[in-house]
Length: 74
Image 1 (cartoon, rainbow, N blue to C red):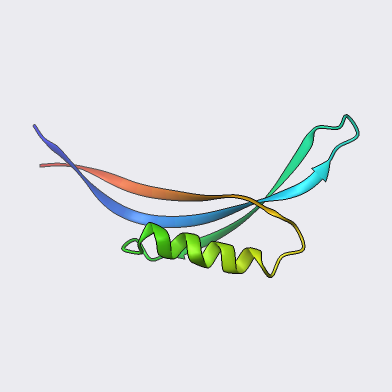
Image 2: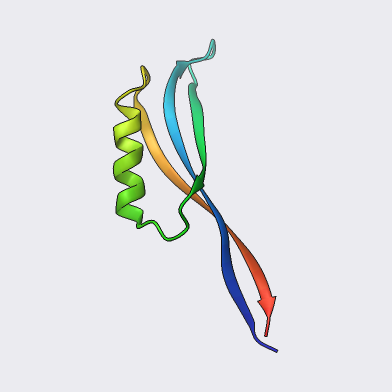
């Protein structure tokens, strides 16, 4: 039988520079924003993330998009 996927939820995660720990290794801080519109374009999510990062005191290291899907047997 075939399986289809249905988007259930999307989150946007900003990865921010947290400096260095006592061993000199980088620390990455995360800010997660839930309830992102599942139909939102990747470019729109990235644009919002960079705008929000401009309001942060830490430097933006990366933007992650987390999608939750449901697998449905058809």
